[in-house]
Amino acid sequence: MGVFRKIRSRWRPVADEQEPPAPPLDPEWPYSIRPLTVAQLEECWRLDQRCFADGEAYSRETFQYLLTAPDALCYQANAADGTMVGFIIGIIEPDFTGHITTVGVLPEHRRRGIALRLMQRIEEAFRKCGVRTVRLEVRATNHGAQKLYRNLGYTVTQRLPRYYSNGGDGLLMVKALE
Ligand SMILES: CC(C)(COP(=O)(O)OP(=O)(O)OC[C@H]1O[C@@H](n2cnc3c(N)ncnc32)[C@H](O)[C@@H]1OP(=O)(O)O)[C@@H](O)C(=O)NCCC(=O)NCCS
Image 1 (cartoon, protein in one colour):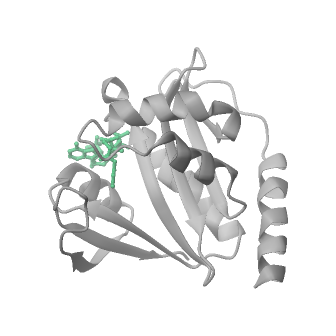
Image 2 (tube, rainbow, N blue to C red):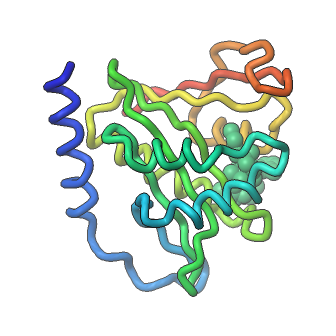
C-alpha cells in the first residue's frame, strides 16, 4: 500500500504538468479549467462558503488537508478575469475508487456548463490514474445536482439515512468509467 501511495503521488503532478496550456477563451464559454492548488486555499474556501450556504461548507482545515493530500485531484474553473468561479475535489481511495468529495459553482455562474466540465475533467484525470469506478454522495433533496450526475451516467445505488449533519438523507451515486 505504501508503494502504491508513492506511485500515485508521482502520477498526479506528472499528469498535471503534461497538460497543455489553457486554450484561448471561447466567447461562447468564457471560462477555463485548470488544476487547483493549496496556493488558492483562501479563495477556494470563500467560494465554498458561498456555494454551500446551507451550513455544509468545509472548514479551512478540511481544504488544507484535501488540497495537499497526495491522492487528491483538484480543479478550478476561472472566469476570463481569472476569478475562481467553481471547483471540484476528488480523492483516489486505496481500492482505486475515485471519490468526488465536493463540487461547487458560484450562484451567478450556474447553468453555464461549469460543473459539467469540472466533472468531465476530473473523470478524465481519474481514468489516467487507473480509476475505473467513481462514487459521490448527494443530498436526497438536491435534485439539480442529481440531474447533473444522472446526465453524466451516475446511478443511485443506495440511500444513506441521516448522512448529513443536519439529519438530511444522502444518496450514493456511482459510475463505471470506460
Ligand atoms: C450543483 C452545481 C454544482 C451545478 O453547477 P452548474 O455549473 O450550475 O451545473 P451545469 O451548468 O454544469 O449543469 C449541467 C446540467 O446539470 C443539470 N442541472 C444543474 N443544475 C441544475 C439545477 N439547479 N436544476 C436542474 N438541473 C440542473 C442540468 O441538466 C444542466 O444542464 P442545462 O443547464 O443545460 O439544463 C451548482 O448548482 C452548485 O454549486 N450548487 C451548490 C453546491 C452543490 O449542491 N454541490 C453539489 C453537492 S453534491
